[in-house]
Length: 200
Picture 1 (cartoon, rainbow, N blue to C red):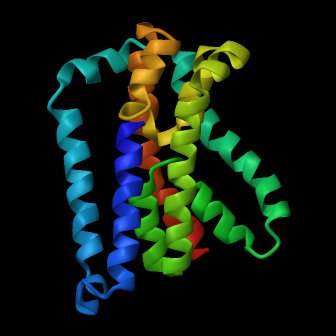
Picture 2 (picture 1 turned 60 degrees about the vertical axis):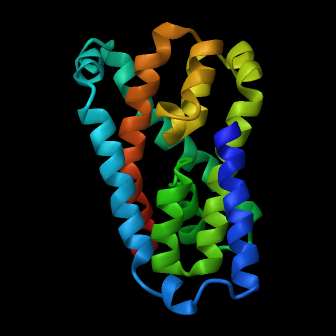
């Protein structure tokens, strides 16, 4: 929760800096966001590669549970059908591009900004931050009403980092590896899914 609030704080600070022309236009019109994105992907890769125990634990997961990331992606897309009907001022392509961030706000917003513009990129950032925050806020209720897997599915791509402590606390330690697995698979799908819906 604290990490998400810090991210929102920096986002607001960025808006203020942009309005006050603190940062030269050449900076944000350059490819700097692409370099930041590459650095983020490198960090994710090294964190996984640095812990061989995590990779080995993935192999021990029950076969049925290996389908949870697919269920999360399909469930998100099913919900987007209703979002698309409600938001008449947004195209189906835009709704699915934003929704396919699966909570991975830093990555999806950069891609969407590159392909569809700053306005939709900002919307993607806020939407995916909202998914993470909402998951954290309603975690106990989700587990109580829908069971221990619900918080993992609701967290989308964030279950290997910010949502993981909530998974351990409310679903139990035995779901930690599944949560990391889900986060890894959904994280990995985001660049492909978002790009797909941006270009079709």
